Image (tube, rainbow, N blue to C red; front, side, top):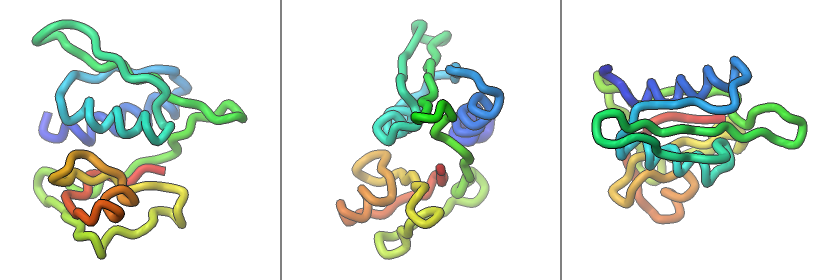
Length: 130
């Protein structure tokens, strides 16, 4: 697999479109950090790891809103393995008029755009979610 982050976000999006409550992805520290951030934002309701060593996986449970629809609508990958995309503090803007968020990999860890702007750090723009 050449782009594990794209695989993670597409699996989450496809699970929501198919009406599945949860999805399982192969484990990595980066994927786990991204999943925890998405849980903080309320896109995921639960993040759990299963297995040991080589068979380790992350079980992600998708969150629903009051009407019963999934909180994730769509995602867009910004930085790709062949073409990295970086954002400075001044480049971080609201996504979809404030209804979405950009996820950044910063020197202080994985952050949403608003958090990175407040912490005054930039980094690699991983993806946008709304």
